[in-house]
Length: 325
Picture (cartoon, rainbow, N blue to C red):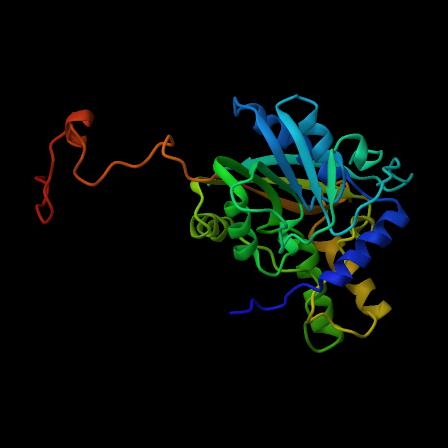
């Protein structure tokens, strides 16, 4: 069955190109790239052939290749070219903070990547059992067929190959979504999709299992960014190429009165005591391994050699038996 078209992929690429012309905002990707490097250092092995799937800048590749645990890395991106990374424009006043909940770099890509492939994240050009590692930074949240993309990654990995990805999810941009919904309800008599839907952690874990990954793990980092005004957030989203890419977006221009009302609601509901406003970005982390006989496997039911009650030093109560008072 053909998956529903949620994101306009051609528009998304055009928005990314516009972001490059404006000067890309890479602060999220830079933080994510550092965390990727930290997580991969915990995996004590070498990956001869790796793929960076759709990450919008070279920051992730630069961070991972610096440690020497990867032999060669292929960049897969529908857009290939040098990605400038100028400093933030004066006056934006962006601040960031990060917390954990359990459950970019300048230069030409060719400086850090041996091979560049123009391809879409939903149509991988790799044969089965060819890759040792696939990573993806802040890209997969905008594919229309995420289950299919994960299944393709799993097939392309060699046995015991690793998949590690970060994508936007959860309550990302919830403040902006709520502010636009209230403004449009008041002034336009209805709500249109202004912020893309994001996957939640439980669904992503289920998708990893559905795709056939072994030892799947998911967790989320929340990054809270503060701005002098909500318009600073909108400017950053344009420079990220992350403005509304939805197929079902309203095709008429946003009225100035609606925009100004949304900014008023945002400032009134999501400002800190110092007047700066918050924007939440939930970074969903996914990891899974291509199955291999050497990996840990759960025991069969009834295979335990010791009762849990003995380990806990308590009395076992059988089903239907009431404990004594």
